[in-house]
Structure formats: C-alpha cells, structure tokens
Length: 312
Image (tube, rainbow, N blue to C red; front, side, top):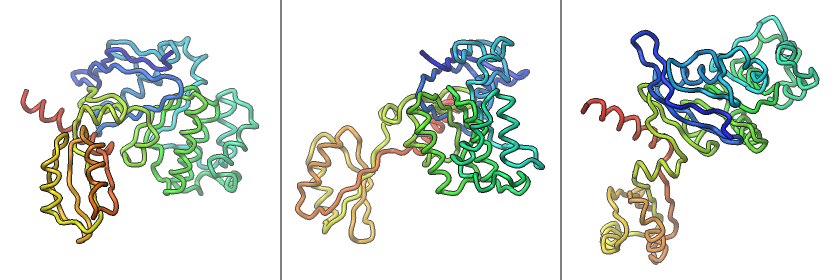
C-alpha cells in the first residue's frame, strides 16, 4: 500500500507550469529524498501532498485520499510537517509551544516532556522561544512534527541551523521512524549528509522528474565512473600498462597523490575484477573505492536535463 501516490500531477500558476507531470509513490517505512534547485518544483509538490494546493491536473492521494478535500481532516493528524523556516510564538516557552500544538493535534500532553527530551531541549523547556538559537527552534519544530506519531513525515531542509552532532542525532531519529513504519519525504540541499539515510532519490528540474530510484539504480543509469585510490610503492607507468592489458574495465585520468598513492577512474562494471587485480599486485598496500556520490548523481541528471533543453 502506498501512503503517498502522485500520478501525472501538474500544477500551473497562470502561464507558469511549476510541476509538469510528476508520478511517484512512497510506501510505509520508506525515506524518499526530494532534491532539486530553487524553482525545481519541490515546495509546490510538498504543498500538494499536504493539501495546501490542489493540482491543476492528475491525481494526488495521501493515505488513500485527496488531501485538499474537507473530509481529509480526520487523516491530517497522521501527518507531520517541519517547514524550512519554523516560527513560533516568541513569548511562550518551548514546553508551552508543544502543549499548544498537542491540544491542536489532539495528542496527550504527556508526550511533550518525552519529545523535548528526545530532541535535546529538556534543559530549555521553561525558557521563552525568543531566547532560542536557530538550531534550538529547528529542534522544537521537529518535536511538534513528531507529536502525533505520524505515519507520514515531511521535512523541508530539516538540518538548517543544526550543528554536526545535532544533525547526526536528527538522522538517527529518521532511521528510527523508518523502522517503525513511518514514511518520510526529505528535502535538503545538504546532499552528503542525506545519502545514507534515504531509500530512493527523486531529482526534480524545471518542474519535471529527472530521475527516480535507489542510489544503485541511479548509478547504473548515470554510468558515471568510480574513483580508485591505491596506496603503496607503485610505478605509475607500470600500473597503467598492467591495467590496460586486462579486460572487463577501462581506466583513465591517472594522477599521483602525495607521492605515495595513485588515483584513477574506472567504469563500475569491472569493479570486482579490478579490485582482485589490484590486490594481487605485490606493491599495493591499500585500495579505496569511491562510488559516485548523491551529489555527483544530482549534478549529472540536472546538467543532462539542461543540455537536453538547450538542444531542443
């Protein structure tokens, strides 16, 4: 069962097409990374999922229902949302803010103290929000999004203002929610931190879905080279000739690193054969293989879309 399903969704504002025929679905316990440049259609897509906007055409179903219809109110309590720029009543304390939202969401007040502890704000529960740092306000925003123990959680730039430790703690919570069956849609421009916490990536550009799939699927589709760094007492020319004589992989862009390592690129299809060959070399002490990152995949698909648009 899909908790969110978009089928050929379009959204226009006058003559401007913000979203152009997007189709995707999210199931329970799945984390979907939604990525794109400013104006790519991410915010519009999230607003349609939240029921704040109705699509011009196509179908949007959340928990099996159209989220902008009046009858959806009974399901809205199963959705959590953390906007990019959180804003709370400045004169209230953190605990008072959460109690207010708990009443709005029909949630037991007892969850307030639990969540403040969980997001690391127990020590500041009685302080007014106006004294909070940006990171503390972001954590308070996350706490309100989790109040209703959501089946679906939408996060828009959730780690803005968080220090590295708080960011790690945040993603630990995302992993925990996933294990309990919560579906998560996560928008972020900080791609390196997101990579290991998502199940699939959806890359938007100019209102269209440029790529959708697991990182492994996107790597195969993009066919970008992997980067290999070899440590040891190596002769560059000898290693190049040795690898060139082997079949199953191509190597290129050899470069010396710090006098003790060689780095080069190779196609991914011959990864295991290449690794075996390198490890059999008597002068090789260590091998590091770096597959194309989410950031590199994002750049590839966005630039490919731009080039296609220019050619057309």
